[in-house]
Image (tube, rainbow, N blue to C red; front, side, top):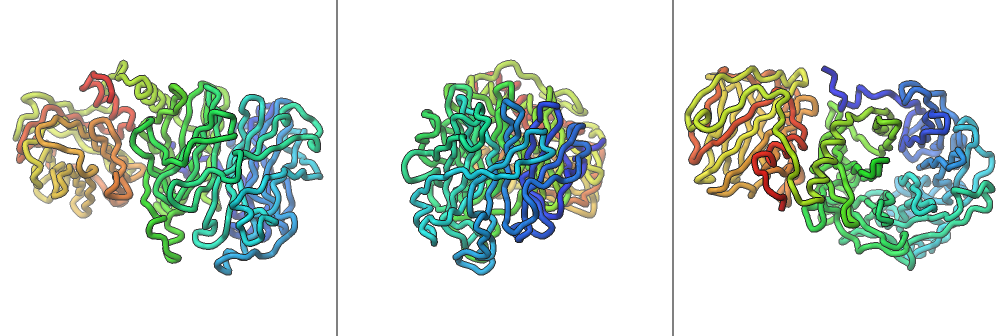
Length: 593
């Protein structure tokens, strides 16, 4: 069965060579108008410009490219669209209007990049994206301290935007990242600002549109402990607040709330799943939030991170930009002025771990949900399984209310279930055939157990044959539970986060072996492992050439375990994280902490 999460199954969006930020609006005639930054060369080359393309079949096919700005120089970059109530489509972008050929920068390669400076401008279309205004209009952006401290004293504005415009209380808002200087990591210092128009939604004369720059004062939205805060992404909340996410080099994305329409914001802080809860992990990559018509939210991120800022050297400056595969989503619900995020799910992946998937847009068309994304040289659109989103939203709603609610154990794909005496120490059972991982099939093993010791080498369950082929789950020297996969010629291992298990406490551990993404994930007591502070990743990759891990055909329960196994479930598919959480909560049936 085709895995919809694999990016190869998406529909291609046309481009030249380089392509970035393929953002879509659904026009009045229901066609999709996609705008993007493209060019015949690589990112940042002088021919970079912005285009549109139109689809009348929800992204399956597209029109030839339509120039909004012709091929540079001067460069036109980082275009974001907005559909006004009148049906007019606006395109906002960064324009190197003075046609600067180089800038003052720390490195020669950075000095030649002139696509992240100049004027913030827009053009518009009144015919559904087929033609665009000849005239471009400049949006005045107020200078902050970071601008006045740049090498030109603020006379040249360094900035760009990835924020799809949002409407908040009748005004239009667009997020910007102001840049202080170019050097390590390209943008070596940055912070967030917003432009707001209170009359764009109604004013037909573009020269009469009013703009102001927020927040108040001289300082934008920064990172807590380093100079990089990029790509501020904005959403209007149901309670009248604004919520913003943005990337850093600190191993976490940041978030901020404004209760006064963007004039002031909460202090810089790493994003958390719930107020006062665990931090979200994320590298220096696009980190986007959207609110759908049902009032619920999704968050795009990569679910790993380390504090690159603390150990940055010129040789390492590219590392925070890497590892954007797979993509994870969290589902959010609003409660008492805050967003509560679910445990994340893999939504997109590529077979090659080096492929970077980023700069998405989210399209709600009828009752269907779609994502666009780019790998910088390929752009695609994908339909999202609605059930994946619904599962995350239900989980987040339970978190927000602080209760388990109605949950049930997943039964689809359940091929073996043991409990009580059936999984007493040393008892064996027939083991159903395990899926062929090379074909992209998956399985999930879930155990409930109590350990009397955290000593290494305790086997919780084992189905290996005499040649070592099969699956075994055992304790390791870190005091964690580790899964070993073996197909007779290849061996892969991964363990749960360290420090989660304790003696004398019943734990529920679900090990999700995802044969599509080639990833092992652990959900321990209802929480997806994310590596904590000890390691960058909570999930691990297994060998992509791993074949069948069928072993002896017999499963032995707890053959060398100090403690007891109370239940075991085996599924012939990957459980979603939401399903694993439901299984855990169905066994607990108590309010969430």
